[in-house]
Length: 78
Image 1 (cartoon, one colour):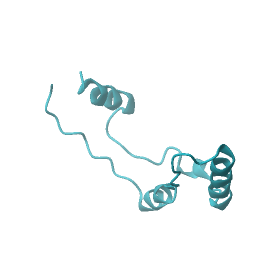
Image 2 (image 1 turned 180 degrees about the vertical axis):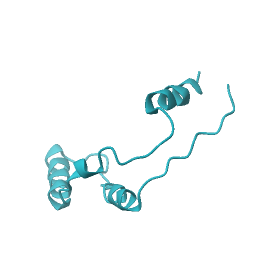
Image 3 (image 1 turned 135 degrees about the horizontal axis):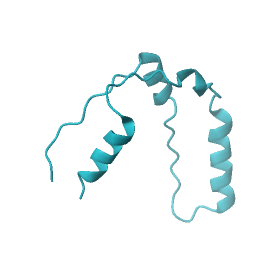
Image 4 (image 1 turned 90 degrees about the vertical axis):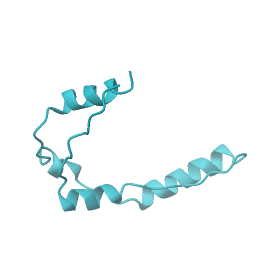
């Protein structure tokens, strides 16, 4: 296994704030009915604000090829 450090990626502060808003946790205990689960999921989805994510397309400035970076990370496990 190669011991290499991944290249850090700079992320715009507005994009980071937007990404933090996407994380939603709903705890569903064992034995919860399907109807209750659907109700909770629908509730979370209805509360989430709809954002235009296309304004972030192409904004991430990196000096590496994303596909090569992904392959490199995957190969670290082999």
